Image 1 (cartoon, rainbow, N blue to C red):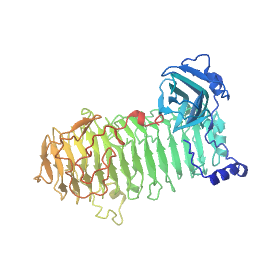
Image 2: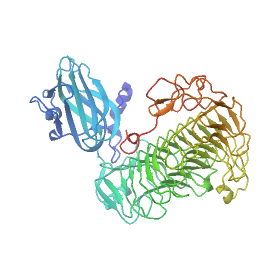
Image 3: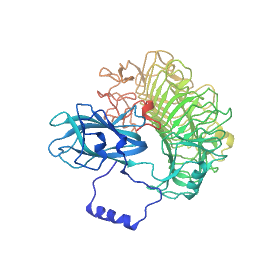
Image 4: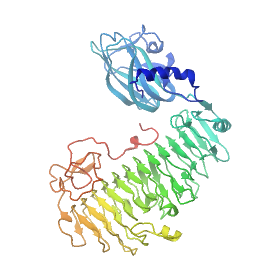
Amino acid sequence: MIRRTKLFTVFACACLLPALIPAAPGYAADAKLPVPASAVTASKDDGNVPANTVDGNLATRWSASGDGEWIKFDLGANKKVSYMKMAFLNGDTRTSKFDIQTSTDNVSFKTVKANVTSSLNAGLQTFDFPDVNAARYVRVIGHGNSANAWNSYTEVEIYGEGAEGVPVSTSEELTAAIKNAAAGTTIVLADGTYTQNGPFVVSGKHGMENSPITIKAANPGRAVISGGASFKIENSSYVTIEGLKFTNTGNKAVLLDGSNNIRVTRNRFALPATGKDLIWLQVSGANSHHNQIDHNDFGPKSDTGPLIAYEGDGDGNISQHDKIEYNYFHDIGPWVDNGKETIRLGLSKISLSKGDNFIQYNLFENCDGEPEIVSVKSGGNTVRYNTFKTSKGGLTSRHGHKNEFYGNFFLGDGVETEQSGIRVYGNDHKIYNNYFENLTGTAIHLDSGSFDGGADGNPPNVTPDQLKAHWKIYRAQVVNNTIVGSKTGVVIGSGKRSFAPQDSIIANNIVKNSTGTLYNEAVASNTVFEGNLGYGSKLSNKSRTASEIRNADPLFQTVNGLQKLSSASKAAIDAAVGTYSYIKEDMDGEVRTSAHDIGADEYSTASTFKNRPLQKTDVGPDAP
């Protein structure tokens, strides 16, 4: 989208820049997109035809009377669309009202700006909206003007970024373009198949933050990487891979090796089954940091091996400050006991390293590969605002310390087995503001460990076998979660291993199930309980006071399909105890009041929320 507030001095300097600095090769800023007269159609006209809106003449126009009449512009291919300029007949004496929509397929249109009203101006007026990364068709729906029902537009201009750059249509041309790429180069792949015996290698290439090297499809999903081909990005920075479809066989689709500030965005990963272990996207190597994997489609997958795997640098360190977000992971299976994670964030041998990575705003649907859908094997990471839907398995902090898990939605169907929530090992994890419903496995599990790594979590001379062990839990905090209609609630420990959790806290949670033990202490521990609610089944298998676990119906109401607090939820509203300063919002992203409510939800009369269970339309290549 455009930015229009400028100081005069900045404007003056900017006007001099084109004369002083040569344009970077292949770089394309937002510009007017060409639209031929033949590419403009309309629902109807009165003889003033739609082509008049792109003839550069304010004295001609398209006109049609009636609410809902439309004019449509075909850009010829999917392009980024940033804003529009429009001029109106008699625009200086009356205002016009309209909606702006975009589409990739000329069937499904999305409104990007609704109920727009023009200003009193006969010239071109600018109408800004959030950038649409892929749109071929732009449609304006007219709602008449302030004087009558006529929609009369004299000129329309659409601005964005098209397929400017270095065009390629063969594997050989792609290889050559990569070799010659520099900061600002955009390599644009025409529709077709790109294959060779081995990866397309981007080695020692460095873009800049505001001028990356971009390798993108002219039309998302229509440039296909197949056969023995793949992408290997090594010792590089500020490189973007965008809009490709990966159907290659026998090797990874994308390998990020010793690179930073790499973005893998709006691609489709659909590698065929090989019957062998296969990682689809791997991040490894030294100096790996600030990479972004977003808005991709991953699946289906039946081979063993993770879809995304972080393998470390060979010296005990994981990539840092990466983001995995807004991806659609789906249809993983069949189930195996181990080795088919959707995301594996680390390995046991690098588990003592700190990642500061984020896994957020992803949708996991029918991910039935193994018990650990997301397996965190490093420390200092955040997993938040994801939706796990009808997926067999759960989210596990298998290794590492000080990870945070909050604002996630775990939605089962109550039928398929092993639909689970969160399980952890190690030190100082925080689990809060999560929502669990209809799960057939354990919702929250502070499991027992087979190795005691100590209160500081960094024992001397730790061995490879010890790194692979299930580490004893110290100081886990399970606070303000909601569990409803599930097989189990909160479970402390297990009989499988020797070391019970120590110095942990279970506070201000709600468990409302009709079966099982709501707060199940499978082993003796010094876990502190306070301010919890339970209802509908056996409260606890230990003797706990009402201040620790209270038997009270939370009296939920259904809001947008979720069980949330109602005005009648007196047992939960303003009833949370203790001080947990890191909890400032609830699962919806609403600010919690000074007296917090119990559970993941802070009572509200709102019906729309910043955070909510994600749908397929919220994630993946076609999402906003």
